[in-house]
Length: 335
Ligand code: GLY
Image (cartoon, rainbow, N blue to C red):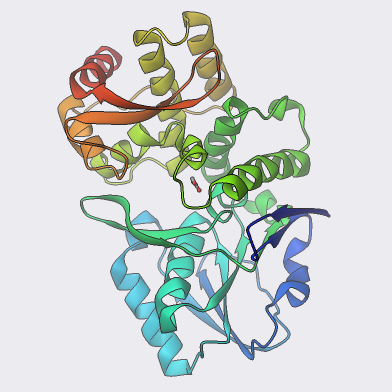
């Protein structure tokens, strides 16, 4: 079992990575918690035993369930059961579950402690680590949320064996991002090691910039277009599939802006394709609509867009990219 730490002032927390990590819940439950509200979905086959009184709250399946109504239902369920401020929420599932349960924990009683047990690859390498929680609005992804750090994260790699192939590949899209954030040789690592390497990379970035006032934004590589694709396509794409397309698009945009050469764009395309993930924007989406949605992104300003882009110095946050340039590169891709 690998033990990593997200170092935050006064609030460091462990991330355990390895087969059977979910059985370590008893070790990481916060002191004083008398009851545990387990938030999960019908199709998650992983039972957990907290060793204290527990009750399971089942939320709906899929990205459309990541909304304020689900948070309200969960909080009302917690209240009816009598979950108190010193108790704990345990989220067992993929990124949708940890995002929603984390947000419900952040707002219920103005904040109860939460432990994440991510059971998807995407959740283990990204969503469950770092304290971002939230839900979508019809206007865009993750527009309502809170930073709410978990007490611990248990990445049980045993749970990855039963993922549907498309779900697993979606996680690889998020994993591919870490190759461009400096994790070397990702493709050659055994699964446990690869998950731990991504967690270590994310933990280091989050430790340096918890609230995304600087370097944490690099974790959004590939996400500006990805979120717009998911919103415009009514979530037909899995998040990791959209990120895969977003990574290749970001490389093309960086090339158009003279930041990288065609060889580096090819490296992006090759890595994404090697994971059997899509590289092209799906047909039927209009560049103008995607750019409008990107303009509503939390990182946009006025008519200009902000992207994380590659360069010879590595990834950088690049503000003030004219919407017209982004539209032009998108239109070329859509041709
Ligand atoms: N998923 C990006 C972040 O946690 O900052």
